[in-house]
Length: 115
Image (cartoon, rainbow, N blue to C red):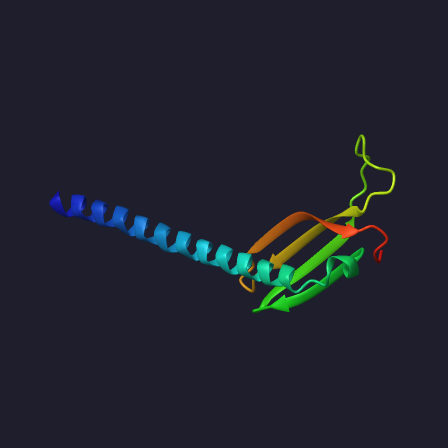
């Protein structure tokens, strides 16, 4: 009887340890992907030069894809000739292990810059 109770306790502890290791692995992957995304954004061309584009590359073994497109909207009360135009940017970074992070943001580029 005591052996059965001991075995059940050890099994529960083993499950908890395995869950902790798996959780730590997922956290490590997320940190790796976030760092790669920061590096990809830092390596982008100047906001006036990016234009509407699709770019791809690799950073620290992680593949990344970026899509930038004009963010078309009609803001009430906006001036007819604004100095800045919003640009929707989506960055997808995939780790070699298969983890993935998607970052959606809006950048401002000078009106009249490369399209």
